[in-house]
Image (cartoon, rainbow, N blue to C red; front, side, top):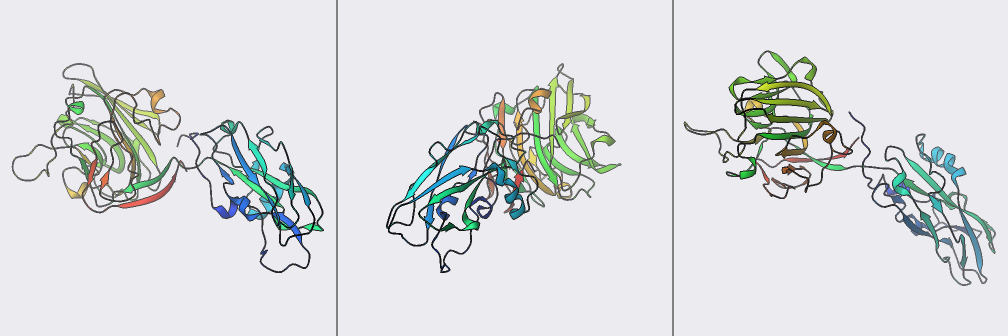
Length: 395
């Protein structure tokens, strides 16, 4: 899958983000200095959203002394190897030069107190960091006066940097289906130019047909068909038009981004282009000049009905999608290849983007409604109580 740099978020467990520590509740014969446990707060930092951070650290002793104690801190990239050894992390590297600075590294523990004044650690140019790389910057007690020694395992605090999830929650649509109630929604009526997108992770592809989204006998993204592999992606239009070939097999247990564009070339013809993970895989012509997605929702039962737009379903329950979905989008324009491959595009877009008429992130995390993040607010109704799955995307 295309590697994307993403905006950052918090990384990892707090246990990895703090200072090395030992049980200071045990009685020590010698009063020794250490970095306060309170210094763990906010040691996990964002790497792409803001350019600078400040964090404060303090030193502490187990019991007050009758005199002042002075302590000096320093940034210690030379201790990165210690971190690797302690946390069995061979991939982390030192924060680059120029990112971390401590302008006033000295602090004092006043007589009769157990905690020092705070020292400020500054991080600049954070947005220059690569979210795909893990970084660490140790900050350590460099020297002290007025106390016999320091607790070895609590002398250093680690600040961690890494990009993380753009997507944390997705919808597991197995044995379920969803639909928008956009009765005669003008923005999707008789669309002559549009783009459909989906991020999917099938758990099983052993049915004759597994449906992603669209309208049966009009315009539908699905996998499998009579006579073709159940994992083979295809786009089906009116009149039996199909766009597929053997190169379009989609794996199970992996996330795949699908984008399909439709460009009307006349009242009766259109050009359809199919992208998988940003790569143009197939181009073909359909014998229709527009697609009407605005059909009012109905259960497609009885003797007289018009097929409508579904997510994860078409025609019959035998075609339900089994797996997870995220980032479903419908645009009223043809996205270019560069737009489809834009940074982070697989995982999020601006809800105010030009031409975005439906945007179901499927990150709601609870309930039977999936919010439409586009300006039009046509939420998806989910038929049965779904499973919302925790993920970390991009992986």
